[in-house]
Length: 465
Image (cartoon, rainbow, N blue to C red):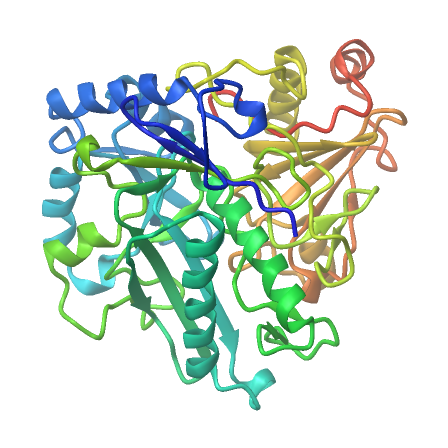
């Protein structure tokens, strides 16, 4: 197995690469990244200005507006709230707020109004985190408690052996299990160590999954059946939670559509200490940052945003059990130029094509594009929207409860369609857009002819989304 993590010690300490020290500054070989100094300086300035702890509590209906306020105020946190909208249960409102200001508002809410999520900002330090879940009915032979304990034990061992973590690993366990479903959110606290961002967390977890497959095989207790009967098993750990601006539910919060699913720690009453202990991107003082951890994907590439499922050449979802466990759209992460540590890498799509596609899907179909992945003659455009044209056609119901939809554009043929992540309802069906799927908008056609670069498999996030 090839695991070559990069462990970067901040503030002029030596850099470790798989246990060996190096003075080389070439990060492509897994060594130090000079951008860490800039990142820590920016964090220090934000703490000195007290912006991250106390600021105005502002509400936004579009995430890009909250991001602008966050960027302008020292990368203050962004939280999201489930809307009370029966037509679109996945819709959210966004709040840009300092930690203390948000906490004082949050603790004052009645329990049923706490439906909040931490929005994981791009290029921010992270604790390692995991979403571990399984349905009891379709997996009645599995002891989920014992399986969870074995999984955490193996993860501790993997951290120590493959990231050279020598100190204790403390697990903050948030539970929302019910009689129907086993569900735990975990935050792994490694003293002095933070992952460079949540993409690196995802790369590490995919390395961990590969390690478990090699040790236990695909027939182990770590591979379980989904909620509905299916011959295709899934990994007990959801690997789709390491994506751009991921929403991770807060301690004490429940999903609006599932009011009895509030996350708790040992059923304790909500407290300030527990609340801050559960935040994934909370760094109370940069003097606590002794090492910044970098991890590559299992195939050696740079970390990328990747969901549990992979995608075939047509851009359609495929079970991870059927495909190689790396995404078609793998490649280097594109960081926004305003974020600390940005290296201004080459874009997967030109800025002009990004803007034209984003505007086209907004004005033509009223969908906000949040990110994209590119492959061979494929541009996949993600959304946070649950409105599914195919589900409406098949069932008469316009939205999914939580699964998002996405669009696929084929630059060579100028075709496009909508698809979604709900295999059970939509059965991998697609909805052709326009006239038989053909793009007829002249501006989009010209942009694809002028700006599309074939076989450029680089992931990037849409500017200002």
